[in-house]
Amino acid sequence: MGTPNQAILTTMAAIVLAILALSTLCSIEAQEGGFSVELIHRDSSKSPFYNPLETTSDRVTNALRRSFNRVHRFKRNSVPTTAAESDLTADSGEYLMKISLGTPRFDIVAIADTGSDLIWTQCKPCSQCFKQDAPFFDPSKSSTYRKISCSASQCIDLERTSCSTDHSCQYAVSYGDSSFSDGDLAADTLTLASTTGRPVAFPKTVIGCGTFNGGTFDEKTSGIIGLGGGQVSLISQLRTSVAGKFSYCLLPISQAGNSSKINFGTNAIVSAPGVVSTPLVKKSPDTFYFLTLEAISVGTKRIKFTGSSLGSEEGNIIIDSGTTLTLLPSEFYSEVESAMTSQISAKRIEGPEGVSLCYNAKDEFKIPDVTVHFTNADVKLKPLNTFIRVSDTAICFTFNSLDDIVAIYGNLSQMDFLIGYDTQKQTVSFQPTDCSKN
Image (cartoon, rainbow, N blue to C red; front, side, top):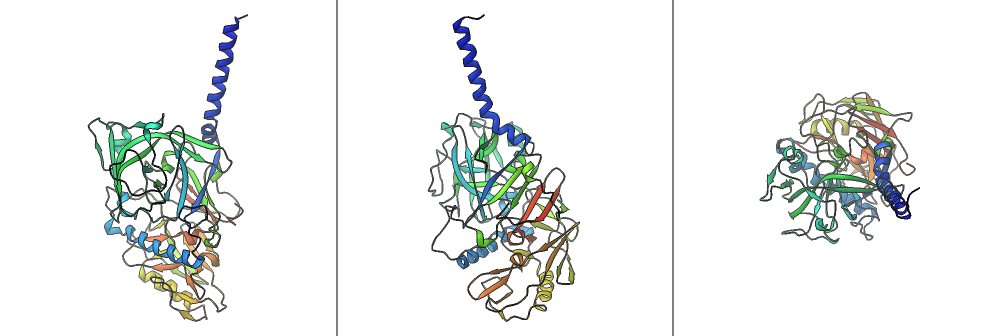
């Protein structure tokens, strides 16, 4: 039998082990199960961008404007093979995520961007930073923050890095609108506030700690959460913990006051009746998620897709949650629009700038069925996916054209679908869903 001191020490050791077990419980849950996180539309009342004076029509019009600004960054002839992040407008994403960095946890709200990779936020001390309403992240107050050395694989594998005088890795990302972020490439604990109420922690996540940042960033945000397919994106860094699976269910824009969800791991499996799946195609840059579009049907008329600037074969369209409209090459779009107008008898009117096909919202008309034919997956859209009210008088087609761009499958076409990405099996799955109940 031990002495009283030994008994005390044994008890204390048990308490320490219990605390350690509790602290790692959420990480274990993330590795063996799944979890979900709020995906906040920037016009939601939960968003720092929310403006209560805006009408639904104002928000739709603003979303369309952001969409056009964003999509110009996908132009094929402006995509440098060495820096995928340079192709996008920095502050054009439609969704936000709340994450925490460091120990103790420091909360930030940042743009969730499927078109970029690096997770970064503004940090102290900052030699040049854009105005930000929320406090800056101070790495000196995080016990788990570590700079990454120049010789580390995370630094070597990332484009546009350099070595500082203390041999730590410096990153540099720039965007098509001349926005930029430079700073320390580091590793720290990243925590996601899951919808179960239990935070899920991921130690040693690679992040950018920006100390020289500028451009068109809004003061309501503090950085970007890259959800692309590149090596340092949140999705790629969580890959082993969540078996390479994530999914989301985007609410219709009329319900933007509520939150959508992004799911990881077993929570992200899409397997109910009615699911269709299409291959993910690996192409450069690996940031983007490429699918293969074969045709679009309007009513009974099937129109074969002749290709985009990405080519006519595999990987000829990008699926992107940050672009509002579905955008197609001009010639192909004209055929789709012609098929649509031939089946609608309502009065055609002029809509917002850049939107091609609009009708008088006061006219009653039946919207033809639209089916998007991906390889091995026919996705039948609902009327809410194909037409949207942009004002009291105008309802507009959610497909459009822009010259000299890649084809993009936008978020209006994705609403009320549970869309699952399996980066191990290289598939994207579509399941018609009431996302308000998901």
